[in-house]
Each structure stands twice: as C-alpha cells, then as structure tokens.
Picture 1 (cartoon, helix red, strand yellow):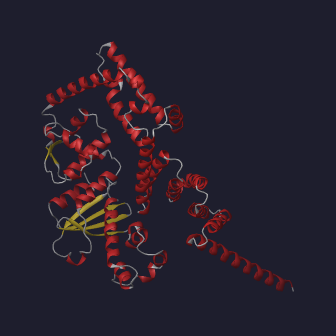
Picture 2 (tube, rainbow, N blue to C red):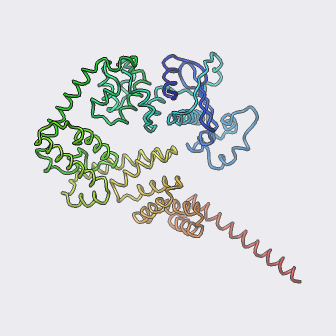
Amino acid sequence: MEHIGCYLKDIYFNKKSGRLIFRHQNTQKYLFFQDGSLIFSKTNQRQELIGEVLFRLGKISEEVYSRLDEFIEPKQKIGEILIKKDLISQEELYDGLVYQMREITLNIFPFFEGEISFQDIKGFFEHVLEAKIDVPVLIEDGIRRMKFNPSLIEFLEKKVPFPKGKEFFYRLTEEERDVLGIVNGTSSAEGLLRASSMIPEIFWKSLYLLYCLDLIDFEGEEKAFVEERQVKKAATEEMEKKIDEVVTLSEDIANKTFYQILDVSPAASQTEIKKSYFKMARKYHPDLFSGELLSDVKERIEQVFAHVTKAYETLSDEGKRQNYDSKMVTYSQEDRKDLAKIAEMKFRQGKTLYDKGMYDDALILLGEAVSLIKEKGRYFLLLALTESKIPSLHKKAEQDFLKALKLEAWSPEAYVGLGLLYKQEGLLVKAEKLFKKALHLDPEHTVALREVEAFEKKKKKRGLKEILSFELLGKKKK
C-alpha cells in the first residue's frame, strides 16, 4: 500500500536519512530526514508556505504579511530575512518551522492514491538542522486525524497480526489498547474484527496505527486461516455471551431512560450517541442472531432492539431530544455543573483548533459546546467566526452571529464578525452599520476603526469623482 504511514514507519525504525517525495495531481511535497527524524520540508501548497504559517500563528503582523513579496531576496530564505530585519525572533521562526513541517506531513495522510518515493541520502543535511520532529508523533496524529479509507481493509484484512514492541504503548488511546488486547498471533485481522463488537472504522485505523508504531507485525497471509476452528469456537462463545446479555437487558429495559439504554450521559454529543447506537446495533440487531433460537429469546431480542432504535431516533433528533428532556426529571445541580464543564472543555479545544486554522475540526467541537449550553453568547460567536471561514456555511454563520448578539448585545466582537461576513458577501451598507455599532460599544476597537475609516475614504473618493465629473460635463456643455 502506497501510504505515508508505511514510509514513516520504515524511515523511523530503520533510522534512515534521505528525502521522501510525495506527488498527487498538482501537489508536490518534499520531506527530509536525518537518522529517522524529520528535519526539513518543502511544499508547493500556498497555505503551507512558511510566510502563511507565521501569519496564521500570529508571529508576523498583517502588515508584514501583506509585504512579504518585498522581502524576497535571491538565495535567501524568507525566515532568515525576517530575522535579519528584526520582524521575528529565532524562537518564533523555529516554532513556525515545526508547525509547518507538521502540517505539510499530516496533510499527506488522507491520500492513498498519491505517488510516494524515498531516496537514501547520507551526510549533507547538517546545515538544515533548524528544527526536528519525532516521527512517531506524526504517525499518531496523522492516522487519528485522517478519515477512514477502505484501502486499509484491503491492506490488513487477510494478515495475521501478532504483538511485537511495547515502546509506544503508553501513548495509545483506550480504543487502540482494546484492539491491541485482542491481537493473538493466530487470527487474521478480519477474524479478530468478526469476533469482536468493535466499530470497523475504528478497528482498522487502530490496527494500522499499531502496525506503523511497530507495536504489532504480521505473519504471512498464508497463515490467515490456520486457526479457523479456534475462531469459530470464539464466535460461538461470543454469540452465547450476547444472548445472555440481551436476555438480561430485556428484563428492565422498559424502566430505563433513553440515555441509560444507549449507555450515554445526558450531556452526550450527537457523535457519542451515534457511536453508542451503532455499537449496540452490532450486538443486538435481530439479524445477527441464529434463526434456531427459541421463540421467547427471539422476542426478547426484538424487544430490546426496538427500545434501542426508539432511543436513538429520539436522541439523534435535536427537536425530539429537547421535547424528551423537558419531560424528564430536571437535571440535578451536579448534572448542570458537569454539562457546563464538558461544554467549556469543548469550547476551549475548539478555540485552540480555530487559532491554528483547523476550522473543520473546530466546527465539530464548537457545535457540541453550543448543543450542551445554549445560553453562552461567546460559544455562538466563535462558532459563527469558524463558519464564516467556510464559504458553504456563510448563511449558518449569519444565524449564529445573530444568536450571539441576542445573548450578548453588548459584544463588539459579534458586530465586527457579522460586519466582516456581510462585507465579504458584498452587503456593504449592512456591514458599515455593524462596524459603527461596534465602535459605539468600544470606540477603540482596532478592526472596527479600520473598517469604518476604509468606508469613509471610499465615500470621499466617490464624492471627489462626482465633483470632477460634474465640472468636466459642465465645461463640455460650454
């Protein structure tokens, strides 16, 4: 499989030095390694260039960013020039280079159809050792961040994994440790999944991560079904266990709340609810049980799954969920504190991602924060600012800016954010009014001042043109 994860595994664990080249359509990237560590990178993607990165990280001002082309000199790197001109420090450049190398590399992980090659090169990298990144960190973040791709199944399903190293075990998530825990060296990957109740997408990504971190390795494909009898036995035992579980669950499921049925908290996000439902569906769906069961057992299975489905249909629909919550016993004071803590945590995580320019990822966390606590204007404000960065969500951004203003009408940031959105959409009259409202609340607001001054300058220019035009026409008539 031509994927960056496999290459990084080989480079790191064999302590290789050289250059990795990645090409996909118009994208070209070069990663340079010294003894297994990433030390330098190049890209032709504008958003990954060092000037763009330094601006996004707040290391250079908007004014400096707008003049970057003026600073370019032959045979000199832009970072060195900025340091020479005292526009950034050596430490700030280092932070920018590390972040740039991470982004260049992590943005390769979603591609399974790109062209990758590695050239072994020895002993000419000493002069570029400006920054250094441990490859295992890139492997972890890259695989966890990328979306599931069916190519992983093709690569892994017939292989027989067995436990190997333990060096990076402490960095695994609970789900990844669960996958490692069922690796036995006798069953194929697809056999392990079949005998478990794990979500397939999580299983395949976790197994691939374990392989790339050298925590597991594979026997040859010819051994995939050597222990077929043991796999069948395990499957039978698993079926009997599930039947016992569903019969026990059926005895008091009618007395459980929908949250208890899905085994989630009242503060659960839509992602958590969906994940729990599919986990239960893989355990309790009637089609997964043998047709030779007693009619009483079949009836209990159908009863349990009907309750599970009803719980999911209600909690996965925001309107139905709110209606259901309103009929439930109100949250205790402790529950409310938990909701607030969870929402604040998601908000802060979302803000960190927003500050890094990772808007799609920030959107998920901020959406979950406002679904938990609907009275925080700053939650809706940051959600709207994030949505305003994504053209297809501009209408939704407008709605959330308005919600933020309804909750906190004294917030100049909300007026400015909505004003910038209207300006971007060409609604200049609305935009100008909002900037003036922001200045009324905060006369020293930098962005609002800048925008209002820009509008005033345009009006003066327009007025001057009209006067000149009038004079010229007047002369013409004479």
